[in-house]
Image (cartoon, rainbow, N blue to C red):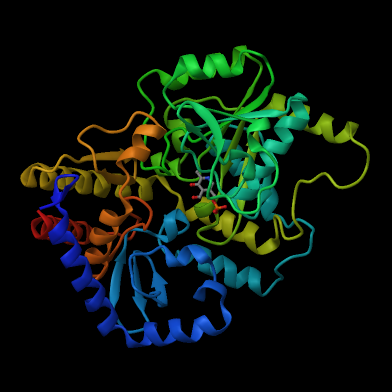
Length: 452
Ligand SMILES: Cc1ncc(COP(=O)(O)O)c(C=O)c1O
């Protein structure tokens, strides 16, 4: 018998084959659409990541609303993936759908602002505590633009990231620590520049390494999630951010906090909940209720410096912005989301369910005696294949097991429960119910029973 993370791998493989068969035989329409898609879609899907799910071919969606969606073969699902956070507040929230319909009758894009721009920037300042804001079409672009502003404002060329980070497809951050040395991520396609020239990388939760990497004063900014979420979750140790912020400040670097996933912590993100004081703040994905857009904010001091950098630059292309950035439709979606969807009440509901979920997962793990643990950042919960939660990216990477994840994910999917395809992240939204959580817990218990 082969064991793997405390489970019987032989049994797991047999189960996986049966689950693939079960999926395939019951979904003729998804299968037919996948076959047709292969004719004109490279990779057979509109985005090649869509092949990374556990299913033998793509699951095609008919509609998605709140915590639920239906596939084209008529199966209903409770969605705990929620578009990998894009739909963190539920699919097609009513206020956003209404705002889109109303704005849809009044124009989509003009490269000019509507009144919503004023309201949204005021609300962002109130909510997140940074006084000046700009927009982007995705969190990736927001991060890319903030790096550019940070370099322009400081006149420094280097950026620092944490090992195992993900901030979107921003080339600069695809540098890992391999045996303690920075190395460009092997998977990155078509990158011909040596990214290690201008990117430094250290382990999360290692203050001495951070201090050493900043000491020569060449780093423009540290770009970080306040808790890592993309290599499995890695939480900051008590006091980490307080000390890290002091070090960053002492060396004249800027702190950019990317809250695209950690907005699960609360209405003002991890930043507000834990009193962080970043120089710049990034939020994408759910800020428009799932409509493509992102925001980034500056402290008053940094806003002054970036505006000076622009003023002092020759006229011409700045390298920041895209034509559809801050379009009328996106601004209307953000206004509706911020005004009516990302509310204290929504978070209170999500926190209670996430607690129920985490407690239930822990109980099942204990009952089955597997060496796993559960990590939480507000409404975001994850089970991880180690008895102790990882302390940094290297530890988190060592415990990832995508083959085992796929067995569990497909078992759940075949029972109408969708969780995020990469690692084991589970989100609850304002429309998720206690009964939904209990169904997930029951299926989790069943799959463990089947593979131990
Ligand atoms: C922390 C973080 N920042 C940025 C991004 C990029 O978001 P997008 O793919 O919407 O550009 C992601 C995507 O997962 C993310 O997790």
